[in-house]
Amino acid sequence: MRPLRRVGSKGQATPGPDAAGVGTIEPPAEGAPPEEGRSRRRYDPAWDDWKRPRRWPGVLLTCVIVLGFLSAVVWHYRPHTVHHKAGHTLPRGKHPQPAFTPVVTGPGSSVKTFTGSSNRTGMPFTATGNLLLLHASCACTYTFVVTVTDPTGNVVALPVDNTSASFNGTFHVPVPLGRYDLTVVGDGPWVVQVLQPGPTVPVIQTPFTYYSTSQSVVGPFSAADKYLSFRFLSLSNGTVFVHVVSQKGVDVLTPFAGRIFVHKTVTLLGLPNPYYLEIDVSGYWSLAVRSSP
Image (cartoon, rainbow, N blue to C red; front, side, top):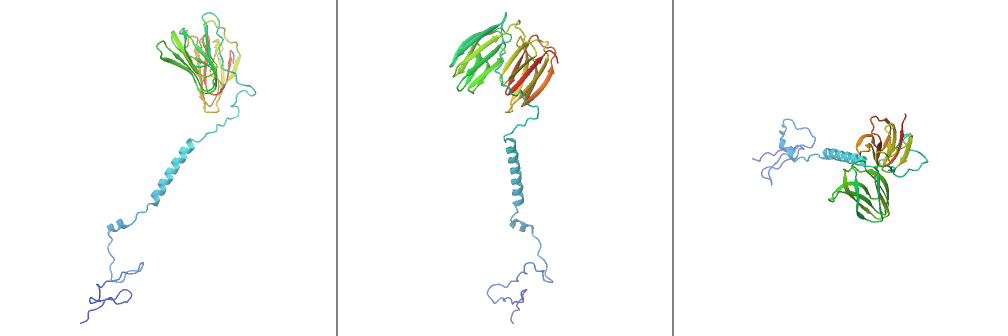
């Protein structure tokens, strides 16, 4: 008896057992509905392991986050242009004056001057323990450094550490009573003065104004000159600190401090008599001192 042959979904005869190979049932065409009476194959979760995961959404999200972070970093460190509002200016048509150097005369005062055109060490002076000022200037080619050392050679102050060609500044150097040495590193003509004003130095007459870009110590002023107006402007994100210093060399208060721009008027009470103004600055500044508002 001839074996029966199965018919495929397209009506074609399927070879019987006597034919080469084993007879199979052809699957339905893709998208075609299952034949009536034929059950669907059960879903096996293991089939998902053979599917390639879609990585594009995660990769795209990661790229967006990284690009956003890099953009924020670049924006933060980009060159900033400082825009100054109207009125944020200093005197026009007026050239900045050099560093202010107090006049030191009278009993109890001393001035010691050192000069040179190259490196020099072992320049001695004696501090009284009161206010000590150091005025330094140099027309140097490369660098200018001034250090103060004690008798054992330890550096107790570094008032000048300049790397530009020229320099002019006045500094308050707070050191106790004793003997000290100056050391200068400079490759051009330089002058260093150690100023120690006594208690009887004549005060500056007010109203008083000064305009400069240099580190300065301005004074002495009478305690009655308590109305101060100060302006500061930096074109390079510079800072300013103005300290009130007594004749004993003590910092009493800091009426002005800021960055880029400062414009402030204050009335100071309880001032020492006399007092000085130490101006630690990196930019343009102007000062006005009065005995009346």
